[in-house]
Each structure stands twice: as C-alpha cells, then as structure tokens.
Image 1 (tube, one colour):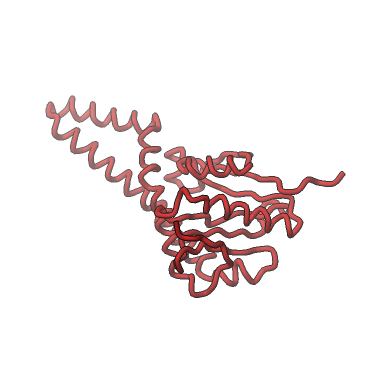
Image 2: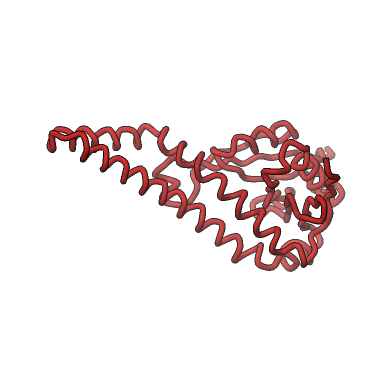
Length: 222
C-alpha cells in the first residue's frame, strides 16, 4: 500500500482538488434518487399516476411509459440540485483556496497525497453561526483510496488544528444520504446536534435533510 501523507494545499494542487471534490459529490446522486423513491409522497404520486392512466387507457404500456418518464425527470432534478451545488462551491471558496483557507490565520486546507497525486481533501474555517467552533468542510477521499484510514487522519488533523488555536470544537454538515460519512464522524466522536431541510425547493419536496454534527475538543474552564 502506497504511503499517504497529509499536507497543506499548494497552488499546483488546484485542478486535482476540484476533480476529487466534483467526483465525490457526484457519487451522492444515485443514493439521493433512492432516497426520493422511498418517500411516501413520491410513491403515492407514482402509484396514482399509474392507476389513473391504467384505468383511462386500458393499456399497460402508457402507464409504464409515463412512470418511466417521471422517474427520469426525478433523476434529472436530483442531478440538477447536485450540479448547482458543485458549481456554486467551485465558483466560491474552491475558486481561490489560498485566499479563503490559507491567508486567514484560523483556517486551513489540507490534501492527502499518495504517489504524487491528490487522493483526498479537507478544510476548515471559523464557523459563521458560532465563533467558538471551526467548521470542517470539503472532506472527500477518492474511491480508490477509501478504507485506508485517510478520512480519519484528516478528521484528526482538523481537530488538532482547532485545539491548537483554542477553539471549543469542530462542527460540520452532512446529508441524510451520506451514511458512510455519518458513521465516520460518529466513530470520531462527533455528535449529531440538529437536522433540517436543505434550502433548495427540490430538497424540501423530497425531504432531503442536512445533519449538523459537533465535536468538542476542549472543555470550558469554570
């Protein structure tokens, strides 16, 4: 197994970082589609359409075709939601990583490097909602390098960084479909503190929830 080292981001990593992030986020599209199909509202809607068309047309072909088209449209909607989010990230913080994560004193961006290639990313910056916390962001590991403990090492890197700078803890957001990420964070000592709907209209209609986790790295002195 090739050695993996965690180091600070360098300018020449930019294209590889964007690729790791984009592919990693795109992987959530199929499980998100499955999540939508499991929602009672979606099942009821598809069932009603199927039954209504079957009754009115007296043919099995039309309702099957209609449901197939609706499923395809649903997948397109989920893909659109993710594509929009990926593009927003690429246009915002990932457009200038140096300025967003390396110039400020209490922010950082790391990459996991193996054989000269970027195989993982993670970053943090002061949380907007609570100045006592750093927010962990952009955690992603290439599929080919999962199961090697890279994500755990990157989690520890962020926790150590927060502790060194005197923060109370680290917070992060993940989604309801990212079950592997949830297990990882819980294994690393994070606790779920809230659950809420993503702001996107499609997300609200499909009950696509976001989860907030917190890890306390330092206790308040009384």
